[in-house]
Length: 173
Image (cartoon, rainbow, N blue to C red; front, side, top):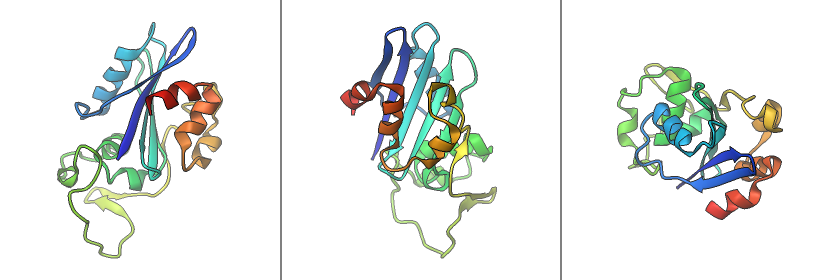
């Protein structure tokens, strides 16, 4: 099960809206969805979380390229939305067949075979455990890269606390 929300910065603070990612197949789709919620081309944060396994933040500032951070690349690569972001960050080929076994809700159809290898990878190489992407994407908003990397559990609530928008985020949970 995943949670996804968009936080759009406005002159009056942050506005949150939960969002369905059913029609999102690429980072470009997600960035376009975020831009649609933007007020005056201001910052929009797409927040994605799968249980307490991993979280991702996609920051869109106007027409600039989106900036992406994923808390645990290996865990995220096992869900369709996480894999989309990891593939974008690593340049992995999305058509390698690995996504075929994933449902759109981010869960796998069946249990993967355990071959004793802890790396999650394909012919293009393993996806490493740990953070991936731009850990400084929230630095100007009060969350340093080091702080972002240290987050676990309910990371999105911690981020919302720092941004001063806990109530608006919790209202869409």
